[in-house]
Length: 61
Image (cartoon, rainbow, N blue to C red; front, side):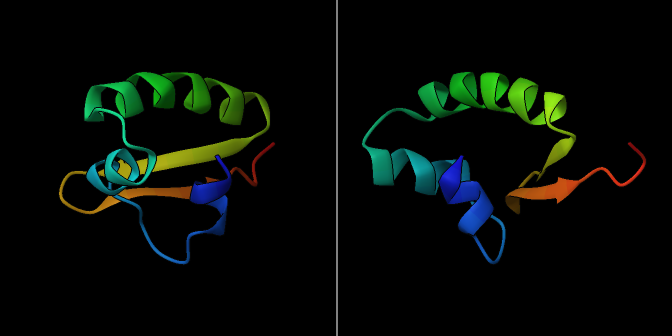
């Protein structure tokens, strides 16, 4: 989660996989839990194919 918050731009799943030396599937599985936790904290985890992941905040809550 820290990696996503600290990033100044989008972060690709492949890059996280390489950095943490785990499979991309492991990253995707873990992101399901991260997304759920973020939602509880009113934080949005955005994603876009070929761009990556980035964090946003829900101002409506």
